[in-house]
Length: 251
Image 1 (tube, one colour):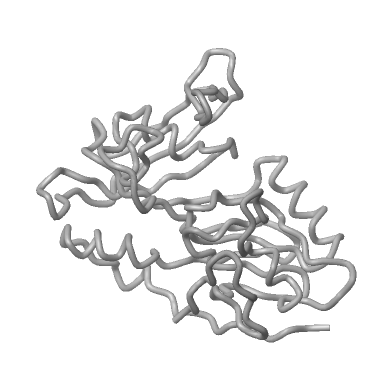
Image 2 (cartoon, rainbow, N blue to C red):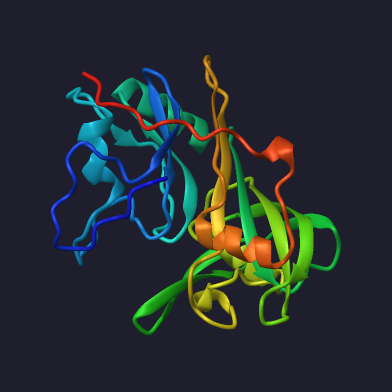
């Protein structure tokens, strides 16, 4: 079990990570980022993933975030422990060679068992907020999707469990493309969900095809597991991986 994330203003716990380490070698760590924990410190302050970097490595040359996840998105987050590893990972991401699979629980159901959303995205300001929107002059964005299960939530509304493979890495891509399908992610009020709440989106797995490949898989966070249980969905035994233990500081 992971430890709770301390609220803003409280001291960070010494020697304890608030997340599970899914993969580790002398180049990279892949963390299971909890929902609600930002990767960087924001203007409002409070803890972030970077605050625990000294527990991942005491080396002067790192650690470094190899990519980002939204604050409310859970799951696989790659951290480079050395600058050389960071450069290799960034080249992989830039070339589109990283395999990124997400799971989302969405309202309703798409029109079919699988498909592709190939829709450019552009940032649109809406008062004090912003969102990504399908736009002809936006940045290219492509997401493959597959329905893993359908059912109903505790209020009787139809919901679907989707596997999303992001072939590009645009901001809010999974959220905007699910909305474009007519199936906003549960809890995602910004993109048309019935009500705001815990975002039902996670980075399920990631694979970096380096000379020594990096691969990790995360389990759904607690709020997604509760919704899955309410809908009668279970994970197949092949989808259940033993949770890795937390790592100790290294030099």
